[in-house]
Length: 229
View 1: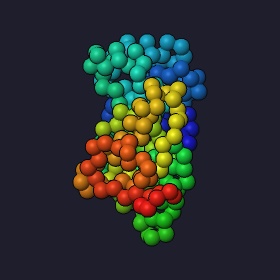
View 2: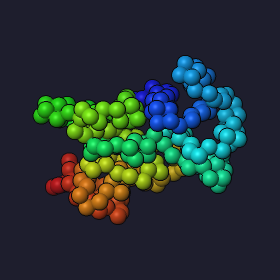
View 3: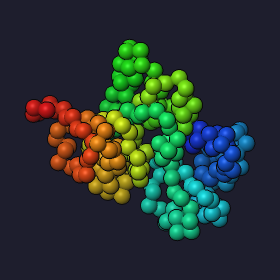
View 4: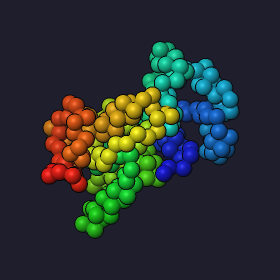
């Protein structure tokens, strides 16, 4: 798992390198300490969302584990702020193919194995995402790698409008329903890993999950412990 604050701390560093003016808002005093260490101004503690609203930024990068349906975010969007995420930033900036894994269980193990299999074959890959290394940090590896191997949580996939060239969806079980508005919302977030693939995309998925899929345009390969796949 990514350490608290690490994702947006890495993103802030990348944005500042690109010339953006960055401002941090968070409830956590731990994040205040990180921001001060990096020289990033901000507002912290209770009322941080009100402070964000007063800023009226061009972009608001929402931390992955926050509910996306909060009234404060709706108000920001209505006033012209683009609500986005580190994951969306990564997909907009990356210049290498992505192999991404998601699922309710087993995604860290599978992502690690994919990275090690590629390494054994002499294929340089950056293993990153929910597995521990922020996506925005891995963007700096592009001169040395052939592709990214990415673990994506439902939070990172939520509201995303891009999909990797190769996607693995391992399983879907009820999870994180304190953050997602419903189980259906959670399922939809998981399917976004392949929702926006074109005909050249590849999805590997349990055969039993295909009934819950819709609008898949890429190639599909299935696996199963219960039926021929």
